[in-house]
Image (cartoon, rainbow, N blue to C red; front, side):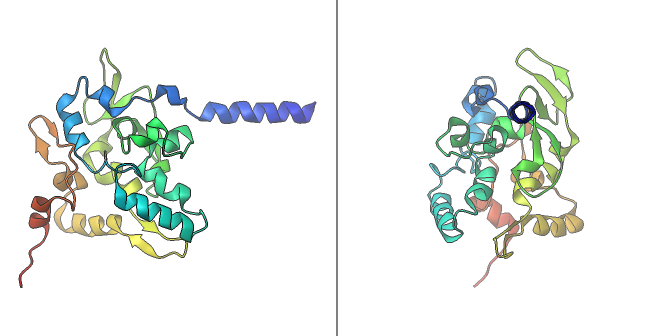
Length: 220
């Protein structure tokens, strides 16, 4: 009886740690009030980060899974579909995973504990976190977090990535740190420039020629 009680208690505690997927709010629901920001996000690579929308990622993801006998099945998906870390389900067909790097994840960031992957961002689904002052509004409570002004909010997913053989394939965090020490600029300064009253949620990147022109000059 003690064993059964212990198992039951463990299951109850484990279930309490996981959010209910019914609490997921798709980005389009945020767009009902934040239409311009939603339209910007819809054109971004964050919105296109899933296996359904990014053919390059889909191919590389399948290749990585095969090449590592499944070891990278979870490692890749947690940043490309980070709500999988909230609901503990990496099935790419689940609605919360098909939304990619969605509003509810970034603005559910209650706490950042490290810079390894999306699991290092602790999510609260009942509050919206942003750079705005804390306040209660009809749609949802808003809580201020300073890291929306810094690169900390980006680094859990963008800091670094190594293969199972410890080969670095992404060093964005190291590159940014070197750049920050020289210029004092954050990720947002280049990738989320202000658009009227709020930062742009297009998340301009290497796919944008205008950003590349500002970052480098090539002559033949």
